[in-house]
Image (cartoon, rainbow, N blue to C red; front, side):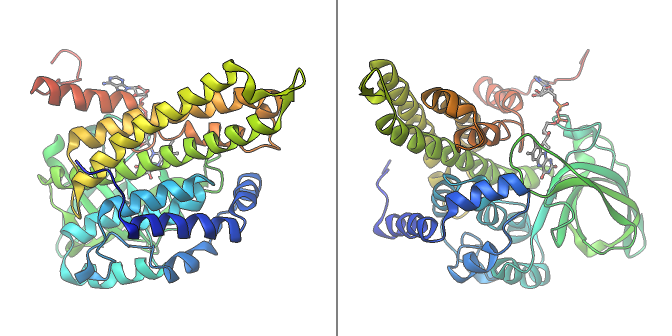
Length: 388
Ligand SMILES: Cc1cc2nc3c(=O)[nH]c(=O)nc-3n(C[C@H](O)[C@H](O)[C@H](O)COP(=O)(O)OP(=O)(O)OC[C@H]3O[C@@H](n4cnc5c(N)ncnc54)[C@H](O)[C@@H]3O)c2cc1C
C-alpha cells in the first residue's frame, strides 16, 4: 500500500492552503458560524478551480479524478470549517454520485455539468421523522400513475433543504414492503406540491441549510426513478463514498483544532514558561496527533481503495466511525489546551468542538456503523428488529 501523495496531490493541498490564507478563510469561518449565512460566493471560486465535481466521471462533465483527491481537498478546507469544504463535499461525494453512476445519459448530461459550474446541487433525502437509523421503515411513498409517480411523505434534517436544485428522495415504490421496496426518485425543487419546513437550528455546522421536505401529491416523471425498487444496494454503495467524505470532514475539523492548539501552546505562558514546556500539554498534543494520524490512515485507505468508483463497505464504515469519534476527542482536547479561552466563542476551538459532534450522527450514526462492521466481521446479518 502506497501512502505517498503524488506531486499533483501535494500541489492541490498547497493551493487550497494558500487560497485559505489569501481569502481569509479563518475569519470567514467565524463569520459564517456567527451569522448562520452560508458563503455562497465560494461556489464560483471553486468552480473556477475545477473543484466542483472533480471526482465525477469525465464523460458526464466531471473532472474524472480519483475519490482520494476530493478527500484531500475536503480535509484541507475543513481545517478552516466544514462550511468552507461543503461545496466540494456535496458536488463530489454527495448524492450527485448516484446520478453519475446510475442515472440515464440524459440526466447525467443535464445535471453534472451544472453541478461542476456550481449552478445545481443535489440533496440526499433519506431520514424521516419516524425513520432515521431504521431507514427500511421509511414511509414516503411513490405510487404508479401512468407516466408519473405520485409522491407523498415528509423528510427531515435534509442538508441543502430549500437551497438545492434537486433532491434524491429515498422512497417506497408502489407500496412494496421492506428494503426491497426502496427506490431513489429525483425531484426538482419547484415541483408543485413540494414544500419546505422551517430551517433547523443546530448546535454546530451553522450556516448549513437544513430543513424538512414535505411532499403532497407531487407528480414526478417515471424517468426520474434513478434507483428502482430492489436496487437498494446501489443506493447504499454510493453512500459508502459519502462516508469517506464525512470522515474527511472529521479529519479536517480535528486537524484545524490540532493546529490551533499547537500554536496556542507555544504562545501562552503559565508559571513563567510557555505551556508547551509542560509535559501534560505535550502529551495532550501528542495524543491528538496520534489519533488524527490513525484516522487519516483509515480514511486514506478507504478512499484510495475506491479509485474512481466505490470503496469497500467495511473500510469506509471503519474510517467514518473512527474519524468521527476521533474528531470529538481531539477537538475536546484542543479546548483543554486553550484553558478558559477554549470555552470562549472568541477562539475557534469551541466552534470546532460543536462542528465535530455532527459527523457521528450525519450520514449514519457510529452505532449503526458498528452494526455494519459486526455483520461483515461475523459474516451474517444481525436483524435489529425485536423478536426476530
Ligand atoms: C448535521 C446533520 C446533517 C444531516 N443531513 C442529512 C441529510 O442530508 N439527509 C438525510 O437524509 N438525513 C440527514 N441527517 C439525519 C441523519 O442521517 C440521522 O439523524 C441519523 O441517521 C440518525 O437517525 P435519527 O436521528 O432518526 O436517530 P435514531 O435512528 O432515532 O437513533 C437514535 C439513537 O439510537 C441509536 N440506535 C438506533 N438503532 C440502533 C440499533 N439497532 N443499535 C444500536 N443503536 C441504535 C442511534 O445510533 C442513535 O444514537 C442529518 C443529521 C445531522 C445531525
